Image 1 (cartoon, rainbow, N blue to C red):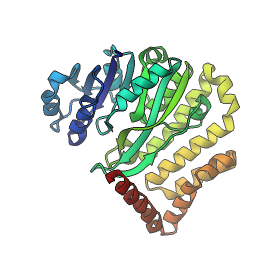
Image 2: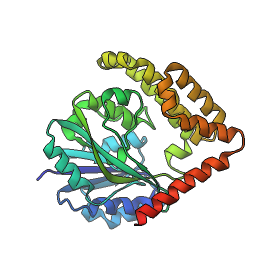
Image 3: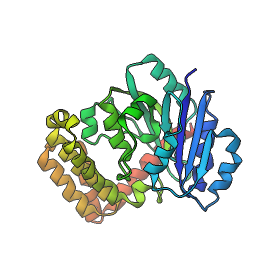
Image 4: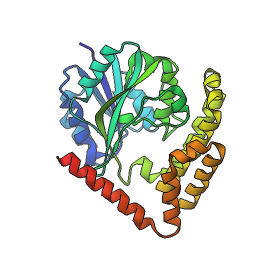
Amino acid sequence: MTLVSIVTPSFNQAQFLEQTIRSVLDQDYPRIEYFIVDGGSRDGSVDILKKYANKLAWWISEKDAGQADAINKGMSRVKGEIVAWLNSDDYYLPGAIRSAVDTFARHPEVVLIYGDVRAVDEKGRTINLIRYDQLSIEDLLCFEIIGQSSVFMRRYALEKAGKLDPALHFLLDHQLWIRIARLGRLLHVPEVWSAARYHTAAKNRAQAVDFGREAFKVLEWVREDTNLAATYSRVRRRATASAHRFNARYYLDGGRPWSSMQSWIRSFWIHPATGLARLNIFISAFLELVGLSVIRRAILRLRRDRLSVKGAA
């Protein structure tokens, strides 16, 4: 039976950590080795780790150089044929790992698989269901983002692609998916495998503006990578426009609607179809600027309430 290795990086996430751990340990798949790399938390996380120590393959709590360093440290110890990491504020849904193993068994040519993601708030209430398409490496270069919590990889592909880049803090996973996509086929599985938590302390909220700006650092890396030259040349305008559109989205989340609108307009100017694909960003930024943000928030609240009712059913 295939061994699956899961790594959880954590730092001061005691509020959510136990649910994350239980979501791995309570999976119905029997061959899982679980590693937790804590960055020296002082919020009670270590007490939780000690509670589950006899069920973990390995854990440590010590100062590290950030999320990439923590994940790389854990991945250096894994032995499973299939690997993944799960952040300490996210959690797997029942049956996720068994489904991932079965998918890899049916598709031996695939190097990375990804499912859909349930977005939840601090209390675990569903605020969105993120359903993905089947993506190509060209799509990844154009910042079609895959929810990391529902990604599983073959270990040999991860080892060949190399470690996470510690110079990246927000799109470190996306850059890794691109490097893995150079090695083989990616496959989308239309099942919801995980819940990703959106809360005020999460990087994509607390540091939203920096999150968007990092897209240009990844784009520069793509431009300089000779292995990606031919692929990038086919989507150059779309990729550049997508970086601006990505930036627009996170300017909006960071409370800077004017900057969001400017970035969206740049996206539209470079590649109109890319901008128009997310016209809602422009509309939302406009509503914020003219003082009608209450409309946007009402729409988001209605969507959240509808999804919460479906989740409860």
